[in-house]
Length: 290
Image 1 (cartoon, rainbow, N blue to C red):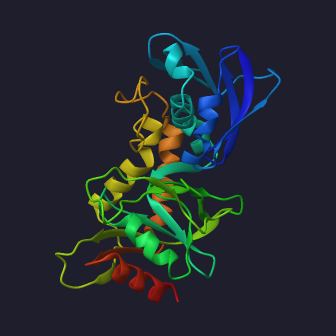
Image 2 (image 1 turned 135 degrees about the horizontal axis):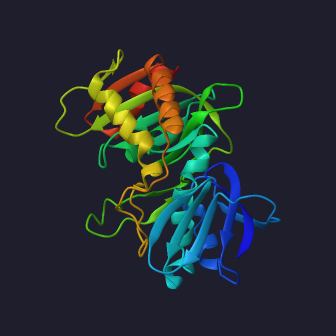
């Protein structure tokens, strides 16, 4: 085994890999992950956070180390980047950060807005409309949320690409396009918006969600707990890894931290947005941010 320092998802932690494993394909997937995926050599002086071996797929935890077993051909593919990113969620949450299924943007005043919603809710299209109004992209579909060193709830840049369908080719696969302009660092969170954009809506509205309902709190717990359960936002091309069963990465201490983070979100600006189209949704958010 060789030990590396892996930077991904805005943390740095220790990763042990089979000796002579070719990581070229994994490093090529760097642009698809928040904070990239960068390996450097690291002396083996302490326990590693994640250890990868080859064999029949399995995930176990021994003391402080998450142990992943992957088929050899999977370990040598770009799936290595995605599966180790997910396994690092344990270390990430110990550092008060969590990966969430959301889209984020930074307003012209430098504060972030987090857009929540189911697949097809209009997060990406609204983000593109906001960028046209001077906002900065901070991640599509996958974003890192947490507490910064100064104690503020903040957003770290997420996935810098988005799958955007060509309106002239509605049945064609959606290509991944780079989001520009894109954030280069964290931003304090000013507002959380759970949204639904659909042409059947007659009117647009932005209404407070606080005090949060029990259902909303449960949705937030599910959102913050997906990655540490080994249930990430689906990523095209990942195969041969043990996604599906719940991974044994969580702990009571991490669950308490997520509850603490939800309590902080519950006393902040949290709204529900409904709009018939992305431009109207963007106009509402820009007006509120101004």
